[in-house]
Image 1 (cartoon, rainbow, N blue to C red):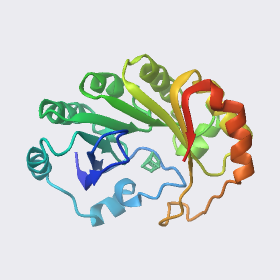
Image 2 (cartoon, protein in one colour):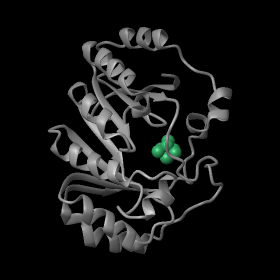
Image 3 (cartoon, protein in one colour):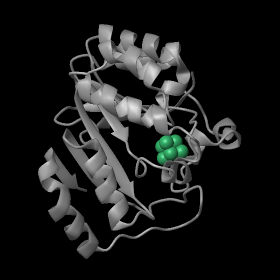
Image 4 (cartoon, rainbow, N blue to C red):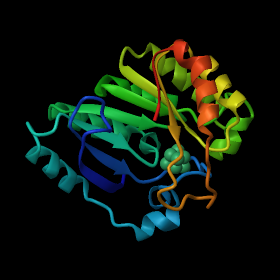
Length: 226
Ligand code: SF4
């Protein structure tokens, strides 16, 4: 396991909590719109400095009582297998809440880590059909479906979220209807803040967002466009 980054404090990544965010390097997806190449592409990961695990835990021990929670994201944390479980268990034993951000491609590890985390955020990249591969770069449809069901049954607080890139309105409606009913679904505007893997830029019209909102807002306990 390689820690590729640490945000020492965040007020927005764990709902209602003061948290830090730890970025684990490596991802099995190749989403064209990904802007974290330093955490995804092996040649970029090598160039990017890492943080020693012991230094991260030293940081956390100094933050007891100051931070409520730790967000574990990537890359894709579950590619670390059993190491992720040991990592989360150790954070949890220090008294922090844990939110795990995942692309949902590894339901087996997700299932094993659930007892040691408090909140799951899963990206839903595309409609649950052949298009998934175009948006994620790998064939993982069955695993994604399994993770969605697992998360909904987990008893944990959770959210599903989709960053809108080259999706059509129908693509988003299809995603929403597949995952519903569910606690929270967030649609995210693509933010063109740094270069992404494909070099493409994406834009969604506000009127399209309104159409989507009208059609799906009642399918979820909480629905937001952000
Ligand atoms: S799953 Fe996330 S980190 Fe991995 S390639 Fe896609 S956007 Fe990037």
